[in-house]
Length: 525
Image (tube, rainbow, N blue to C red; front, side, top):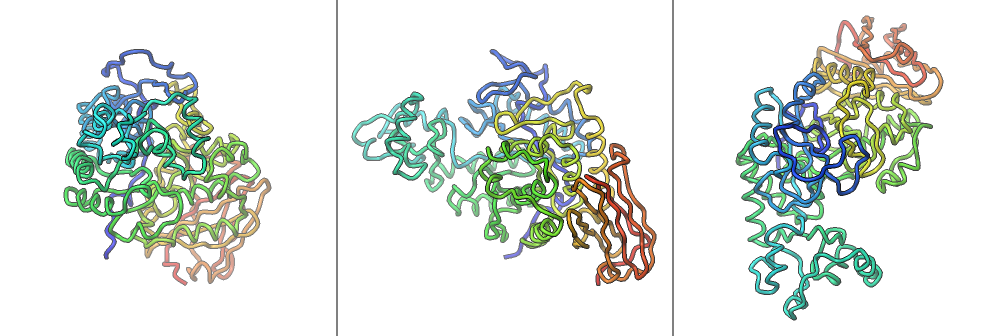
């Protein structure tokens, strides 16, 4: 089967938004009590961000260089993160409803920006109307097949127990500790809940009625104008569902982007019949291990199971090997559209994982913006927002500019502009040039352009020599070293050509160099 990934994603710079926390518009009514915008976030509290708030901040995002938005769930839900949907056919009224989403899509498309939304089809909220029907009518409900229920208990007339007390939940875990996770809830509550969380009944996507209901909503929103779907926990959904998902959305929009929340290397999902790309957490982990160095805060890393297992300190050669694997582990059509992120609503923020060290974030952003794949900025990272694991990583965006790290924003804005200005950084070939100690360097190149990126996340100045054959025998070109606003003098390195067509790089501690090689030949040796 041929692999067909959307062309626009190769050129995109994404910005992930948690809608309740990004921006609030006075045009969206806010009933009831909200948490103060700047107060520490809580697990269940709402702050009142909405979709019209995003519309009103599009000039800010365009100035940053953003070309695509990825929104965490927006459908009607009883949770601030909206992974507890109770209506797949409507946008949450607290976000402004369907009309606000229409305005956001139109405003983005008028600006040439794309919008990807989050699809959660493994589980719903217990407020989902067919689940309520089961709660009310038990075995008589025509929707009983839409969920994984304890059929024997249902036939015996035992009611589904969807609202246990905290003590009942604790006792459920203790009494059924021998039962595989995910099935304990079926024994104790009468239905399977995702991770045994009572608020999240698991959906039976093999049931024809459930499948039809979900696909009519998916097709509706694709026709409505969404440009892509980020799919939540897709490995817990029946594989055939995703084959049909791709067929249906691509029949409506052949350029619809389908990116899956899968944390590990899984090539069989990326053969052209399921997903276009995955969220590139292996890249995030490698960047943390290499760039964080002695600044890594292991007390924060230990709160994230995946990071605790996979983040390991790396020197230059180890990172070079990891990076080489990451950019070649899938076909080029897939690598070009992988979602390259430094963090998300599911992780502590990159800068916090690095002990608050913003040099680590600068270096990581530089790599992110010069690699194959679609970079994605998590809202607020560009101004220095910090945050430990959920819910702290979901703080409200600080719109008072005196609270921003202006230098950090300038640096990230400049790195985005560099990527957008030079096609070779999006479409060119990738080659590791060398690595030694804490230093490594790589090249992005095509037939007419070549860019070098070298990094030194170490605590001491360092140098690296690259011989002529590695460079491909380009002769004696000149070197144009590139910097931009927000790049401190003490963090900028230098590069010079040496006899034989090689390079000598000098890099300050916690610094980097970006250089364009002129005149350009094709480094193909």
